[in-house]
Image 1 (spheres, rainbow, N blue to C red):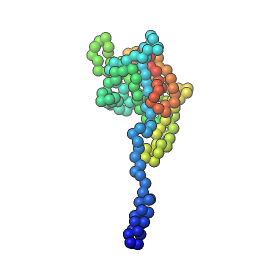
Image 2 (image 1 turned 180 degrees about the horizontal axis):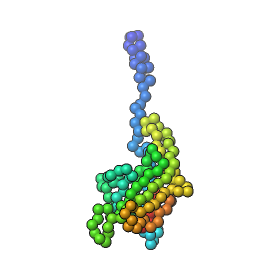
Image 3 (image 1 turned 45 degrees about the vertical axis):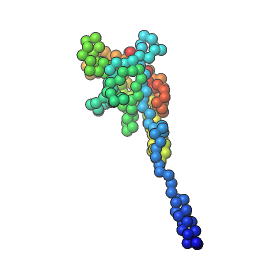
Image 4 (image 1 turned 30 degrees about the vertical axis):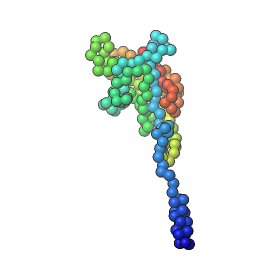
Amino acid sequence: MKKTILLLLILCFSFSGCEKDDICDANTVTTPRLVVTFYDFNNSSVEKTVDNLSIIAEGMEEPITFSGSNLINGSTVSIPLKLDADTTTFRFTLNSGSTNPAALPNEDIIQFNYRRDNIFVSRACGFKTNFTLNGNSPFVHSDAATADGKWMLQVNVKNNIIANENETHLEIFF
């Protein structure tokens, strides 16, 4: 009987040192993407849908994939910024792949300038990075190498702190 009680006590103490597995919850906020909303240039309060927008990051050959497609047809898009640099450049091509003479592809280039802040989330999730667009020069907007006129008529920073994806950070009017 004493051996059984002793065995039970040893088992209880041996399991008391166990910890639960560290698993990062899927709902944990991680590194946010830059949220861009498109607006009608003639009516700045109305969101405007872009047609067949392709976004390619500098140094990449393939466009960013959104919900299984390389083309965006909507008024809002979220794009990732580089975690290992203080600038990220994207080529935004409106009417990508179009052969329609009334809606030919038009490419604008935007280089984003920012500061990175690494924040410890948890042991399981590691770190996330928040971004702050530079106050004096948050972006540089230029036309493509083959000048065809900028399709983005105005670009505004709405929120220069990129800490979540629940708000618009950049507004593009076209």
